[in-house]
Length: 468
Image (cartoon, rainbow, N blue to C red; front, side, top):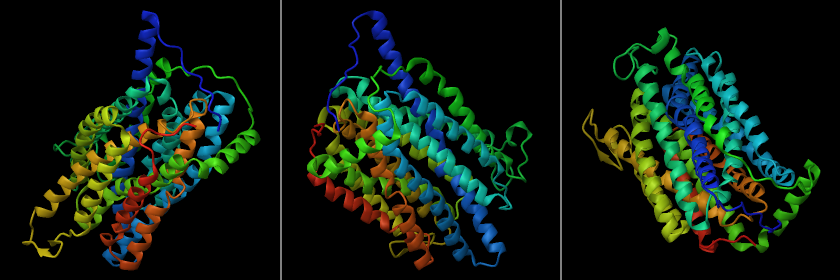
């Protein structure tokens, strides 16, 4: 991996300063625009809706409720597993190719189209389960678009400011993303997503005359996320300009060759190698925790979509606040201590959730109809949102410290590979454990192990990074 730096020209005139400021705000706009796919589609609206529809479909086929719950969770995990494998295979090659050609913006446009198309198709997920497989494929296409656009925009982070500001810039970007996600979730819950009564959370009929019997309000989550993305990506495309970089080896063959040389050299770069391995495990666990949090609440605590939505709002608000604060702490003490603290918090929360059912918490029997499990899970959701947001922002910041300035997209492609090479592992382990135990609750057990592995590997990661 070449280490020749091509720094952006420092702003020396007021016009240059204004352009640099707009560029930062445009870059932050991407987090605001893209986050609803993860907040609404993956975790709090479409994911639980898919789980509920799949469960009812399997029960109609003769399965008992617990077995149907397990089958639904396994199917949802399969979709994320396949998408993750495709992302893992393609991300580093595309990153290397983008660095070789000196162009990232065309790829952002291309995968934005994936995002929008996949999100729009979620509308066809009917409550009778007739489009269940098609919706799973559409969700995967949208997820691939969201993940790949993130790779290319993340690679722009080193060019936005001085090294001392990277933690703050990353944390603020994630904070804006979570704020965008929670606002989008508020709008969905107030105006569209219907509960069992056919009304929204505040007692309104779904907007635009959407039919609650056909769950059109909930199904609107896909088109809504697509429209949100299109509108709020406008500042990004208007204000973000990538520095001109000379094309070196503008072919996929050359990109693959360069990438293989980089991969072969990884064992000699102990800190980067250990960090990619560490983040592979703990980000896999975090993504699985996000992906299955809403479905867990539906399958184990029997929550409604509205309750899951409120849970999402609590977690997203906490995420926005703590990620903004975490970014400032990152800029002062560095990202590694922040990452370690976040992982420890998430391990404790996973242990609490693992021991909780509708009737008891770690063997302590609760009164019938007790609200303790609900309150506990809301608190856990807030903590997961906060610690998870900080973990993601500081992980991006630490990756910048390991990315050679001349090859940032290849570096973030490898970062995506480390996050997706075993992206199937978390969902797959949850799926297998759920199938073996026939318990959606015990299916979450492997996440503690994945977080712990990530924590152990951080021992070999240099806090100041490694760009050579």
